[in-house]
Length: 389
Image (tube, rainbow, N blue to C red; front, side, top):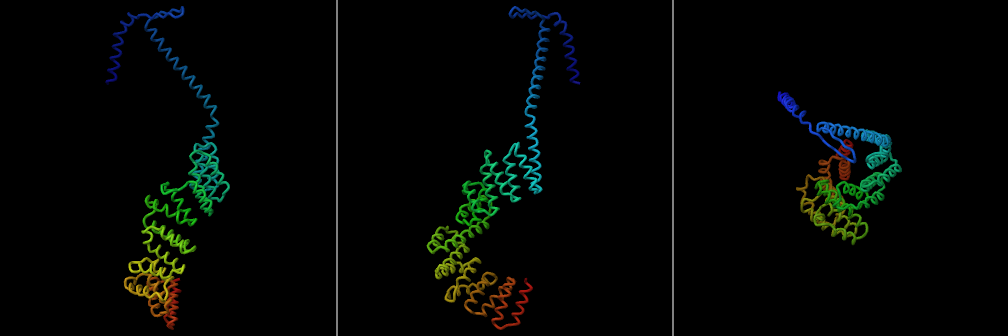
């Protein structure tokens, strides 16, 4: 309703003003280089409007012609890019289906005119890796490395593929190009951890474990397991050389690492191997007084002798506290076997078999019964061992 009223007002205004406009046309006079033009104002305004319309029409025609010419010139390139996008999509779907031959073929074709060829080459390399086509894989990685900003990604991928192929030394050489440090990105630290573990480079592994823990890539329990395993392996490597190297390795550990029973037990075992028996027994006696780890009892089995009466008394003093611990009962069974005390060995084996009914424990129990000429009990133990298989 308001719109109709507005139009009505415009029509009435035009009807009222039209006689005034017709009666006062005015005129426009233009003189330029001998040319003279005289016309009314209304005609001049209409002519200017028409001229502007024609100018816009000419501009549209010219732009359309240029667009057609340029598009026809670059049309083959557009077709190739469209085909590249299609090949990339087909390759991605094939990789999702784990159809590696089709994925490799499609990604290779998509990289030729693709918008991001480095992604196509990396995907093709991955597909070739799954097919164990190492030459093609390396070729794709080399092509990807030629592209800008692809060095780190290509080097990391090559490192990972070499590690999966079992070539740890080549993988380490590639990893060193990236120079991993505790401040590196988490994926690089994870890759470095795998390479260091494969190479048994425990010192390098221990340098990045705190960073992995800080970034919550591993929890506290995993950190302790990995760090203790690394420290233990370092002690074994150092002990294989000489006592001085072993003590130097031990001195390089932190106070917290030295307090770990697993690390302490490994150090004591290496001391025993290097004829430092008394020092090893002294070290193992400290955690036994408290709540020792299973690794301590396992180390005692390999170290204790009949002359270590003080350690034996210490082990016997915690019998009630450790009565339900499998590692303790196994330790005591081995200790009494070395001390040639069959009755006490049998008691320990009976507790061990009750807590851990494995075939090996039942077999040890059966041999202990035979040693004491208890044939019926031995037969029962053998029968239990067969049933536990």
